[in-house]
Length: 147
Image 1 (tube, one colour):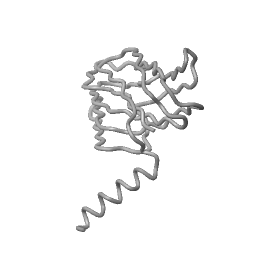
Image 2 (cartoon, rainbow, N blue to C red):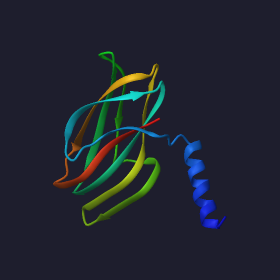
Image 3 (cartoon, rainbow, N blue to C red):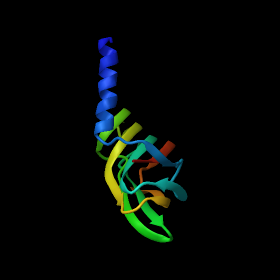
């Protein structure tokens, strides 16, 4: 096997060992919004990733607020920062120049939730700026759930 092939194989193995997980659901956003989507989730940890393409001017703080609901009752929640640090990044790109910013790529955010039992789970998710930039444009801002 060629060295590059070995490197890619090792990266894939490392990702599976570090709980990158498999995508089990995606809530698609193209603006500030609140959405409800149902997924079949397993008991255990749910990792939250962002799949982001955002351009903005000035300071900004952005949050996903996520509630996981089973049988009509909230069972877990998380607040996630798609602009903050990530434990894993795939194709991540950042540019900061003269007050203009670009964030693009996929990243595992530092938030997570844990489910005591598996089954149909409603994901109630909102995407909103805590500090709104002077101008912004979303290409996408998908919240990705992995287990």
